[in-house]
Image 1 (cartoon, helix red, strand yellow):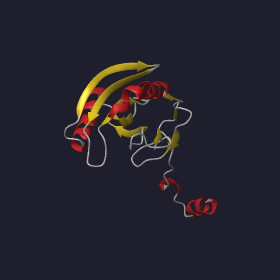
Image 2 (cartoon, rainbow, N blue to C red):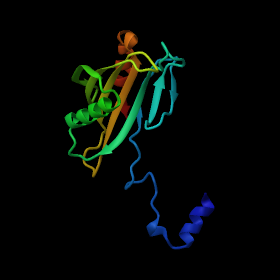
Image 3 (tube, one colour):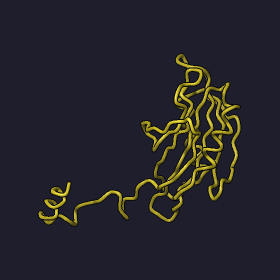
Image 4 (cartoon, rainbow, N blue to C red):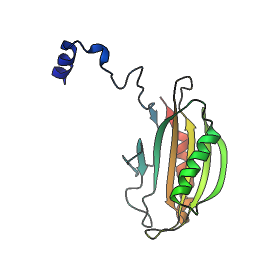
Length: 174
């Protein structure tokens, strides 16, 4: 790696080299969250990370997935929630909102939505709890939008809801 950097500098192209992360190309904001002792941490496509049960529960991997995207600073939490709901409805035409409300966890203002997802050919009915919130910096050309999407078999959600709320509530930016 050092040889490559030396070669690039030697070619006098230093002003054309972009470093990530940097002041101009920000990384995803650092954060911590708490998970149950026996849950695992892993990567999934289109997520920053996920925590979940080590084995499926009733044929479903119970998990809380952290999703990040950059959006324009003009986006409101209401618009973000509507866009998120549109994605759910495209994937599950018969999905229904069970409950939605704003909650505060520490310094985070969080939109919370409970969703009922119908059974598919491959599995049982599911329930999701989605938390949507913004990252710590709002005065940038783009802002960080986070979602924590918690998924479980519908029948197990009442039992798992306190765990999911604890995970969401523990999320803290560093």
